[in-house]
Image 1 (cartoon, rainbow, N blue to C red):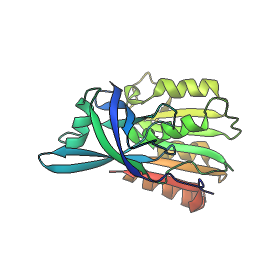
Image 2 (image 1 turned 180 degrees about the horizontal axis):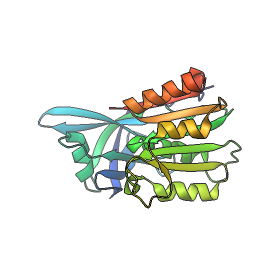
Image 3 (image 1 turned 60 degrees about the vertical axis):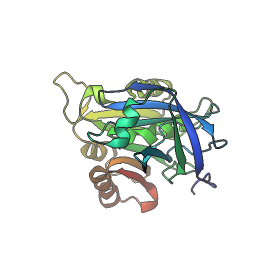
Image 4 (image 1 turned 120 degrees about the vertical axis):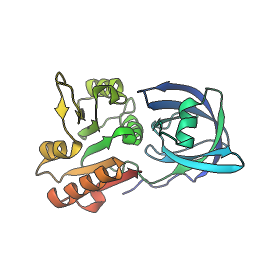
Length: 245
């Protein structure tokens, strides 16, 4: 069953409290809601931010990359897009800047009760909602008895976003397995190589006792969905996804 109640989307105002570059082109931003009332969301949902430029209003959707917490803050993770108005603004904006947004939006959330093993499959900044979902699943004190896997495909070791966090999570929780795979791995890379699709086939071949959560670019998401349905025999209700352009 889905979560019993999704929060109602409303208009809010947030101020940027902290930011850091995760790679040369990817930025992590921490926002605090300062207007609009309490901001309630479910890990995996997204916000739609608003920017005024030259008399025009621009909006852009970004997945929340954190779990709900009591300090009215939430995180975003995004890439700088060459020529992109919104992404360049957010990659350059300084702490203290305020912005309007609406949310929360979307239904890409972990379905409960947890009946099967969970497999999260992400590429690039598709890791953003996964980070929030995993933080929510492994909240301190949570007694999670399901196996949870994160398959994360990127090109190079330095682009494994939040690598230390996921390594630490795996060290702390025996049910969590973090498996990054590199499509352009250097010669000394000791881990998995290639794309997430063959990795998925190799790790879970013959299994249908899974609930899958997929996020990334459209081509990858569509391909993984096809593999899960046609090769693994998963029911559509076991496959949850969000596509990025």
